Length: 362
Image: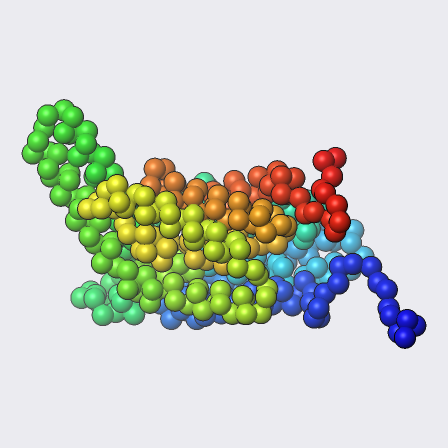
């Protein structure tokens, strides 16, 4: 009987799993959002997606050659570069030029990943690093959002030959306008200028009402935004698929959404007439994409469940802090990179307890 027992080294995995299979599951999870992006933004989505994927694969292959890897194609076939490219493409505005997508992808792969030694050694999420590089280098380009094509076709009274695309304020853009107008109303009130204070207050309430009325649109995708930010429903479907496949655990997504929701509730109850509702916050911008597809990156996230909760809550809190207090309408990329930098400290604080013992302090 004892001769049938096979003793092997850990880790022990209950089902066949590899880096490629996990990356493939995440890519499949992004398919619903990709379909929505193509539906709402047509060829712009396909061009950006293709440019990012080609740039990522070529950059990783050339980086492996420069590093004198014996099999430079090996890391390309694990789909990690493709996944980085897809996430970066989904984080770009539809009107972003293809060459800017290429520049951001090259930076993401070469500087965000390969400089550290490749997959598993990078400190920061490569896609968010590339997105941040583009945001800091081409600010206006990265904050110009177009009207989704089906919505534009229904609303436009201008001949398509006369204009390439129309811009549209995003829900987070309207929210930021409401916040700024509310602050101005307080300043005018302190100065004793009642008419100006009342006018600014009314502007803040109108902007908040406009964005909160877009809740259904943020779920379906009929709003402006980045390619992967339009349809909350499609992102949720992709997240459910990954949870079902166990490509991710529920800890980080739930922590991110909880942190954002609690902060959103506090802000809304403090200023109910001039603030975005917590539900609209959750469905707007890149929050859902961050919760399911970005923050869950196993390389840059903590290992332990307790660490995942700290990591996710921190991301959710920082996203809302930047949205409400900061100058940027969205804070996903900055929140993720900041918490990536804290991941080693979180792992040190939340050590796993060995079986039958206590974690070492060394």
